[in-house]
Amino acid sequence: MQDILIKNVRVIDGTGAPWFHGEVFVKDGKIAVVAKKVEATASRVIDGQGLVLAPGFIDSHSHSDTNWFLDPRGESKIRQGVTTEVTGQCGESGAPKRLDDQDAGQTEAAQGDAKMPTWSSFDEYLTALSRNGVGVNLATLVGHGTVRIAGMGYDDRRPTPDEMARMKEYMKEAMEAGAFGFSSGLIYPPSAYASTDELVELAKVVASYGGIYATHMRNEELALLQSVNEAIEIGHRAGIPVHISHHKACDKRAWGQVKQSLAMIDEARRHGVDVTADQYPYVATATGLSAIIPSWAHDGGPKALLARLKDPEVGAALKSKVELDQGDDGWYRLMITDVKSEKNKACEGKRMTEIAAMWGIPPVEAAWRLLCEEELEVGYVRFAMCEDDVKTVMKHPCVMIGSDASARAIDGPLSTGSPHPRAFGTFPRVLGKYCREEGLFPLETAVYKMTGLPAWRLGLWDRGLVRPGMAADLVLFDPDKVIDTATFENPKQYPVGIECVIVNGEVVIENGQHTGAIAGKVLRRGRSE
Ligand code: ZN
Ligand code: CU
Image 1 (cartoon, rainbow, N blue to C red):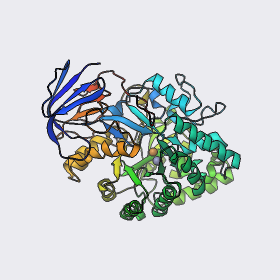
Image 2 (cartoon, rainbow, N blue to C red):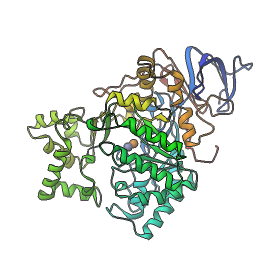
Image 3 (tube, protein in one colour):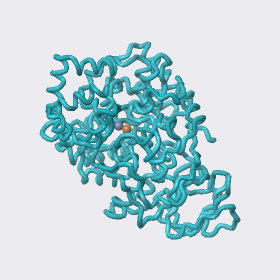
Image 4 (cartoon, protein in one colour):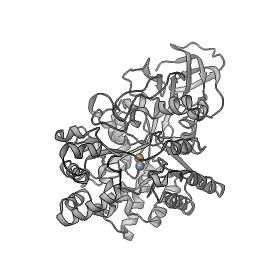
């Protein structure tokens, strides 16, 4: 591994402290020296004239779980300056899974791919990722939904004592393998079928290992505040740090309530419950289209759901409920991003109302046709939030940045569909739009929300800061130019202004180009590599 001397830069160290003129010397994958002037000769010198040097960004909310097996470069992440991501979010992780249930624990991108290794336990999954190679460092959470499927199937009911014991065993195994905590996805069945008590019981197991609880809450619309209450209650009862995922208010009638929810976080912290949150910098959400179907209809799993959609009586009842939920402009706010089959490709990038007009049927029928023909594998974005709320949340001192996206690329196997632009633009957008253009906070604060803060949240004590002894995850960017270019209409575009990215001391992005290096590590909590 080459020694690297980086000079002529303004260093923003990730603590939130003001920048300083300095030089950084990298040796054996670590930051060896940080000084005004470094007295050392390096085999490689990077002149960063005009650039900022910061710790590599930590994507505090990622869904790349199994995408790494399809393309280990993870280009949409690394080109934003991301050098570590936190996967296993929203209740879904790559493991554990029962060997007799091969597709249950996998994300859609991974299903049916021949190159995919097999694994069952969390430890085997992490080992498979390491063997495969990962373009950025990974810190993993174990998903509550994934554990529930492995422990008791896809049923809408309480676990039996035996099943509860099995789920705890899965949590234990994941934590011992090196997970950093667990996540819930309380709008997604089967995670949604859990009671608060079930989550508290499992959280206690995770807490005993020093892990965190990240939650996609039960409701981010009119019941937003009750959901925040539940999250805080779990933190209080289980003695676990609580992390609210992608904090937002998704319904016009709930806009503005983030002021109260953030006050609740402050209040909980005053009382000793350690609550934080992450956010992506956009006014649209993204998920699978089956999320528009009420959760009771998911009982038994995807096959059972499909059968209910197609059933004349149950299907009709579901349609009227979904139609009601969408309200006046719901279908217009909803844009299809990904479909599985060739025949519906023309729907990608179109609003539901456009698709309905194209087919000459009502929007609800068009949604049904897509769900049935694509066997539920349809992705969508929904324009549901407002700019004021995005800014209010972003400014809060306990809020960090997370893309809520999986790694994508503009070529190769991860280039399919028309994803939410957050996959390509999150970090440069915060730096360029919210920090530079809108002046929401100083650049040091923006960097802190992407580095020191998430590293602290996870207990990644050797990353997230520019300090001697830290892993050499670094990014050089142009503070006057950095910006996202990905849009909802044309999302597959890399940002500009991210000039150089170094992962574990290896240069991965240089002059805006990928060097081919795959330099990430699979991190295991409590272990140094
Ligand atoms: Zn989520
Ligand atoms: Cu998520």
